[in-house]
Length: 448
Image (cartoon, rainbow, N blue to C red; front, side):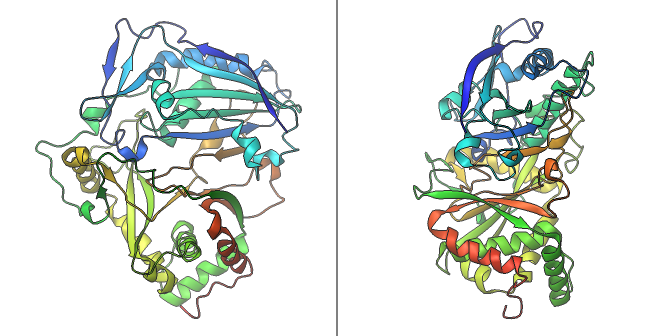
């Protein structure tokens, strides 16, 4: 199975969105060093034939993208570093977005609709710019046609531009224009530095210094050169329900799937990696704060609107404490999701940015993609059957874990959802053993 690129078009806004070159400032969430990466993901669509809509997705999406860039012209800009190391966006007239056209020599069914894709194959579906190229060209698209008539739309987006929710807002705008709308239904809002900038004077009311570190001159993701692997594990509804019921019985506390399963996966990962008991490890995730901050961010704000949350324990505590205690710690951390936490995080960035803020070592990043609305992006032939992330860097972690729904093309054949996780290669065998125990409902609760 191979993918062959046939052309790269530069898509320009359909009319000039501005007259003069200018600089757009970013928010302190956009310039968080943990977001100085590109995030990459792909959407799979089964067919373009069962509709009166034009059948060439590259042409349709190119035209809609051109119209959408009038509203979202910052995607044609280039990121550059200021003298203080923060990023800013330079917008110049006559710039466009690269759009790659490619073809795969197989059907989507052959690759199981990307539900459990071959890593080599799926990497060919999404552009993968290097660090400097990602700054110069922060948004690149690739459409890959399949022999069955379906297609995949891969995106590489520099995280300083937006988060997943902001990207989905943009793609929904492209999609509604592709379906025939004359304008976007949600006007984009940029006011980033004013809406999510530091207070005057800045003040930090939360103990970020306990979980964040200063490593001037280093990158959050230059932590290790050890080989890693990415593998998909299945979580059946029956096992998950039984596990959560046992946690409730043992602790008297009801946990969400993210809290309960996150605790299990974190423990399995720490044990499999052989982390020394005294070392500190972190469970990292992000919280959408668009409605948390006061006043709430306006509808249409498409910058980064999430802040990182951290649970820090010793490796010994994670491995040996009752697992419901770990789940409780994750649940308790959510109580920090309030306006003061967000404002303090922004002010911490303002006061300490030059020191090189990182999350340090031992970070396990978790994110739940099951309910983010990725499947709403319909260019006229129906929504995607699969949405698959390819990013390795997440919240300061080089070993991200994604909770993902199964492809809707396989609806009815599988229950539950899948966990896509990146691990050190040497830890995979032990981690698999713990996941096999979970599948056989051996949760290890009686001895913990």
